[in-house]
Image (cartoon, rainbow, N blue to C red; front, side, top):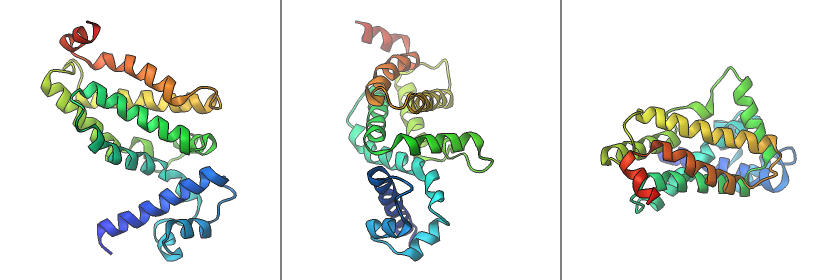
Length: 203
């Protein structure tokens, strides 16, 4: 099996699993149902995952797939500041509409207690690569300030997104993640802007 075919098969399983988790709950979803929904096989499933619990760590994969889908859509947006806002808004919209708070909370709590892989902190994720690419272009064009490094910008962006997700789970979704995140992320990201860009926005 080619690397792309392998990646596609794994992606189908992950997408099918989280769809079923959202629709009927994690405990109620069986591996057989995931295999059927994904159009794969049990052999393929166990090639990538030892159990159903292994899928909990793949939520970050789902986020990355969303970023891959969004990259072509934001290509025509000139402002790097606006690109970052759109990425955050669309990711939070997806989470709010298709990821149960219970499972999101499980992933976030597992990242606090696990001694194994910290999925959300993996700098090789597509998520981090795309953010770095946007920030590099922003600094080179003079839109973003140069008083902090690209890596510092990306880390702050990721920290703030995780903070929103933790708070949303703790508050049992009593507010709109998308609306609250968008309003506050746009203000926070102004910290990244150069003085000239910020003055243009204020005008």
